[in-house]
Every structure is written in C-alpha cells, then in structure tokens.
Amino acid sequence: KAGVTQTPRYLIKTRGQQVTLSCSPISGHRSVSWYQQTPGQGLQFLFEYFSETQRNKGNFPGRFSGRQFSNSRSEMNVSTLELGDSALYLCASSSVPQSYNEQFFGPGTRLTVL
Amino acid sequence: AQSVTQLDSQVPVFEEAPVELRCNYSSSVSVYLFWYVQYPNQGLQLLLKYLSGSTLVESINGFEAEFNKSQTSFHLRKPSVHISDTAEYFCAVSEETDKLIFGTGTRLQVFP
Image 1 (cartoon, helix red, strand yellow):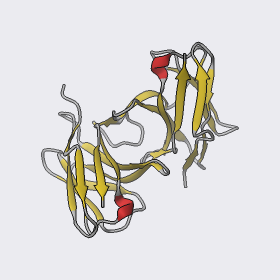
Image 2 (cartoon, each protein chain N blue to C red):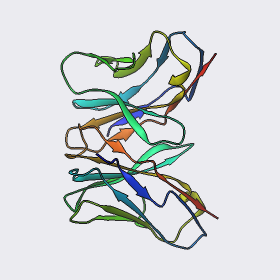
Image 3 (cartoon, chains in turn yellow, cyan):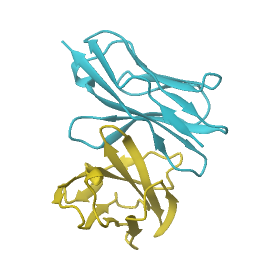
C-alpha cells in the first residue's frame, strides 16, 4: 500500500499570501488530520476530517481552514500568511476517527514565510 | 482538558546504556496513550500504544512503556540503546472521541 503523500514538500511564500497544501491518505482511510510542527511548540493539532466532515478542530485562527473530498483527499489552506506560520505541516490518516487508532503520517510540507 | 508534558527536551546517552523518556499527562477521564518516533527528515511513526489491559506495553524494537494511572505517567524505556535509536520521540494522549494531543517531544541523541 502506498503511504500518505503530501504535496508540495517545500514551499516558500511571502507575508500576506495564501497557500494550499494537499494530502492524499492511505487507500481506504477516511480520517485525515493536520498538524503544525515547530521547534518550540512541537506538534499542534489543527483539525481532523472524517468522511468529508470536520470532526475536531484545534486552537488556530480562522486563517487556517481545510476540507476533505469524497475520495478522502484533503487540502489545508492558510490565508494572509504571517512569519509565524513557517513550520512543517504534517498530515496523518487512519481508517477510523483518530482518538484511539494509529495515525499514519506523511513526510510533511515545509512552509517558509518570508 | 487533556495535556501532555514531556519533561526533557533532549536526552544524550551513550550506546548500550539504558534510557528513560518521561511523559506525564493531565486528564480527568480514561485516556489512550501513544509514543511516536520521528527520524530525521521523516514523518512520525507509531512506536507503541496503551488502550486498555496490561499496563506494560512493548514495541518490536525493544522499547517499552508503562501506564501509571496514579502518577498519570507513561514513561518510555529501553534497557540498551543503539545509534539507530537517535530520533525525536513524542508522547500523545487522547480521550475517547476526542483529538490526539502531542507533547513537545524529546530528542534522544545516542553517542558511540
């Protein structure tokens, strides 16, 4: 089985721009979660989608949004980028909602905001 | 609300020495507990998990963790580390039907 794929792997943007990141889960997985990883904060939960519905949301401003398509692929969008948004964005998938099931992580998208 | 504290941001250790990575959590209800490992330039991989039953859980590569409800801890241990164990280790907790919360990570550096 192919693993979780994320595109692009690297991205450089400037303040004020917006960005869309993509995540393709493992085939058959219906849950997709997004995390922001920074050196000081570790992994912070952004949101989880299950069967096209947002199931859970972390404490991030409304500039961060996401969606999930009928094929379980997910996108994350960040509008009006700030310098502090520079981070590694990780996507994880699982066959059922995340609370007790193993999450399979992709390699991440490294976003740099200049 | 649940939270996770990993007390050590970095743990340096010599090869073949024992190691313990500490994890404490805060929750008022039953929880599920996880340890994930992140090797350089890779995503996270599940190392081991506690859902219920025996409080001592083991991974296939020699790590073990013990769930201690009274101390709200889930420390990760290995009796003899290898160079290849050098990585960042994340403890995570979730309550039923809730989101997965990660600690800030512990960087294990194994020296020859």
